Image (cartoon, rainbow, N blue to C red; front, top):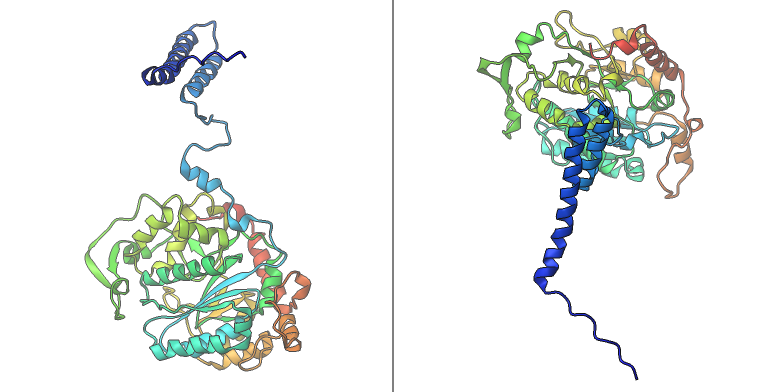
Length: 447
């Protein structure tokens, strides 16, 4: 029987290790020589500069064994560009009817007003965060939590959340901004399937039904940001931008007013300041940018506005107008009817029955500022919303709910035909259409 010859002996480990680096060394030497030759040859007139550049790039590519993006390639060079170009969650195919995410905030004594505003705004397709700040008593905050938990409608649809760890919010201070971002973060984490974020207070009230608003917004792009803004800060430069304030709400458990330090600062040069209304409707995409801040602008501006008086009237405006990917999505309106003092538009008047006609003719979906249980609220309920005291606004979803006593899955609006819009939808449509079709609209973003 023939036997197989023994296999050749393996080289010693030293030779094996040497073999591993000899070949790459020779390859690197060859490619380096090729690169140097190409560089020298590119200086001669017989070889075009474009061909030399191409050959040099190929040599570098082979030498590094990694892809080098070309100037005309689709792969961005810097990580910030990669993050900026990634598809955002709200860029998915839009549903027929948008969904809204509300923050309704209040302070001591606002519990009843907050609940009334929630009732007038409620729709099972939307999401809601309620916040009573630490100035409200523990009993008032617990009462709000208990009412929401025990309400059969809120319990069934599970779309109302009460902030359990309340924040201390100082009037005119940056804690108002942090509270808004806190609510937005909750809505992203726990109820991220929405299209616009709207911040309101217990002193706000709707002038149209949610069916009106959802029906109207279903025909507009979901990336629009309704935020009143201007770069003409005027008197605010001396009274707000240059002074440095401290908000004790950032570090104290007791609510006190902001205070000023003696030194002043210059106007920023790293970004341009903008100012405007503290009430806005922001897109899901922009809220993600504010919270994630992949190019650090939102965090940088937030730190600056930590010492800025009335920062809610500047932070969001400055970020969106200094962010290249969002500045052209702005619509210069806060969707509110507000009766300001004049000058200098510091404090809004309390709205009364005398303002009702102007509120309606403004076509705005919201109004502020209302006194607690003012008679004008009853008139809005009766004539604009059709709402009974402590009841929900009549709509298709509520009619279906009253007829359905079972424990079915949460209701979802899948088509505009499931909405019941009224005259309010025409008013809101006239407002938004007028804003978007105004002369020079595309050239008036962030000016």
